[in-house]
Image (cartoon, rainbow, N blue to C red; front, side, top):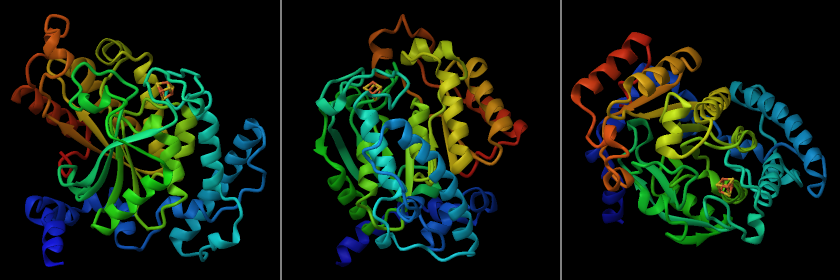
Length: 376
Ligand code: SF4
């Protein structure tokens, strides 16, 4: 037992900043609900979503399901505010036959059958194992699940679950071994995934961190797992955010903290480097939807020669639209994956980002009043 305790607590020595960061008043203010869940003074949203009753049959048509979802979302937000302020005591989920969370799971399964979890909107019936652009059928695969000590300081130790495959095709992907291989890892169903999450929580995870690849094509399995999870632990969505509006609506009210990647400040760079259309419009919309209902740490990986077209426009947009979020301005870009194989095609990003470029990014963030230091 002593050995296990030592291993579990090792993060305190590896990442002392993960403890120090909570002395920072801006971190405590901007991530106050997350901190409250860690301290067991707040309740993870997915648990509260089990305490709201769905009043329709789940075999109703999809329009009826969405109408009920809209109604319950309003009811949920009112309930959440009252729970957080201590105005009401919690409903018992034992008295509820079909919950708001069950409704979300049913809608997710309907989306799977004409897949539009992401904005590629392939429309294939993944419930019948048809495969779209991401090459995933109805199954989800987990490549690894462990206590991650390399995430942003307030998130460490993070119970990180890496899914295979992705909806983007970034030329410089650092996880290309799993993002480009839909068969990497082991098949998990909703119960298996809940087992991973509960085990990570028991080992000391401050959050359950769904990443990949990308979690988006696995939304049905993740929401399904929440119906089996029971612990009061933060649910964290770590994604490139190229998901559909419908996926965002399902995730709102169950995700507590968002860790979105904001890669490009325009649609053209995204189409050339990640093979996606309308990137900025879609991803900025999804950032706003995340910000509307949760606490957010945006990740922005600075690319060489992309300050004017990407870094500065993103920081300006964030300062204007999401003033209370935090931004991790990351400087660890290295040319990898297709960039190394096709150096002429991606010539501007065949080097690491320079010290001057990082300085310019930090100066811009300071000029705009963005909170970046505790997490970068
Ligand atoms: S998740 Fe996206 S890429 Fe995969 S099948 Fe669905 S719509 Fe297509």
